[in-house]
Length: 378
Image (cartoon, rainbow, N blue to C red; front, side):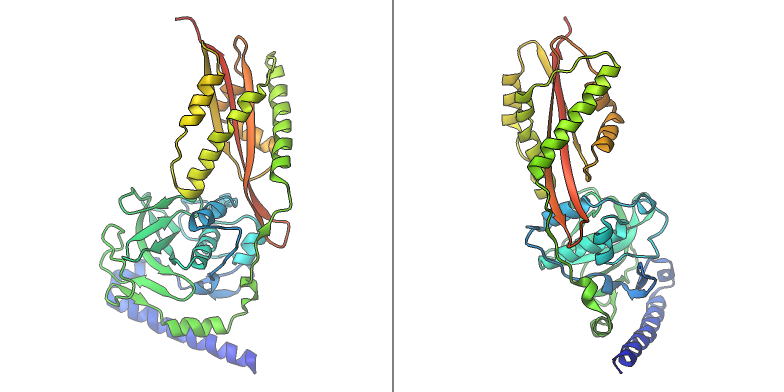
């Protein structure tokens, strides 16, 4: 009996959505060219109304909206669905599937970020539109009390506010767990769009009652997600990674007939810089590094120079970290440098260690390598 009611609700919504789409096309012929995505296919091959892919999500381990963006940005993005493709993916992964895989496309990142922002009671939406470069794209939007939008890049964690140069060009539709709005304005250019979503002249809404009816017919168990602290010790793990990275650097330098000398005091002085980088990324606040600069100047002898290389990774594979560092010309030159009384320093810290009930999780080691050498004669 319940199964029959579910099928009937889905049939009625499909009929309604077809009527809604015809009404939307009747408003303006060019609407047929817009990226208005009401349905998608999940990883199980089931057709889903896109609003069913989002749900408010809370975790005591994620302290703010900025921390949510930081956390989501640390989950690897599948290269096959990296930003800049020619179309939004026809298959979207559920929040549950995305977190278990600990890897996903742009759409998966946006669905999770929007869900976490909804968990903080923010007026949050997934946006479907295009980038300035012309490729179709998906990102997240929050509307402030005055209706001014902020845009969030779920891959980088960057937040764009009023006045910033945006990487986005157009918006064709926005949605969250309860609402779906298609842009009914003459232009879909962000610079010309008005974001009064409740204005039926500007945005054509899907009935909230119809969305609620669809949600009632869905199994919501996959939306019951719990994020727990990872069981690894971040400080012990970081120290172990430092030891391994030092060994790899030493081996690399030996291939160039270079000796290696580590300066543990200088390694410790790199901590404030790492902390400042993390605060800036997590909270969007620029932190003064005046103390760090003063400490380095005090520690480096007169006549010597200091160089550093900061890097961030979302995995703990030290050999891959080393390879990625060596692909940077700056870091490669630093690691293979030589000079009188040259000394090297390394410091690693791990942030944002969360996991589900399964072993999957997101870790963000941050590494800085530095050295100082004698300045050449004038």
